[in-house]
Image (tube, rainbow, N blue to C red; front, top):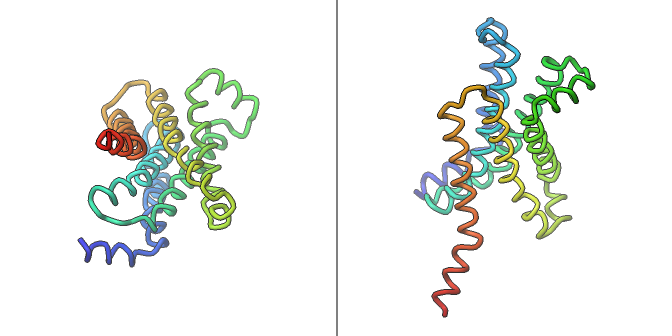
Length: 205
């Protein structure tokens, strides 16, 4: 395990960005070769959105993996989180540009027509705030409040998964599994935050 952690410590952030760019490269290749479905715009939006959620789940798993498996990839968590935000930007950009054609009035009507868009936008706003404060200056400036602020990532993950589930016309197993994974990670976080202190208090009594 020590050897594996030593190897992980040598992985630079740029390597995470390099691997994280693969879904975008594959999507670009499919666009150029016409290897998309009958609704190419929908495919582009959905693949970008799913990738954003996958990296978001990946960033949430870093701490539990360190605690439970003793694998420490904490120095890569910021890059994984920013990858999630980058794909969320592309997902929103694809909707604004390709689906809505930069017609702002149409966008508002679409939000009213499809309320699940509100969940997605809520998740995006949270990810935007977290991305803007993912730097050393913000960490020093916010102090202890920085950690509290970044706990909003769990709310962003829940909103994003609800956005995905509601957008589907037919419910399939994979989105449900991803949502279940997010709930498990949230429960684990709650256990760490409140379960262990409560257990220690009960043992003391």
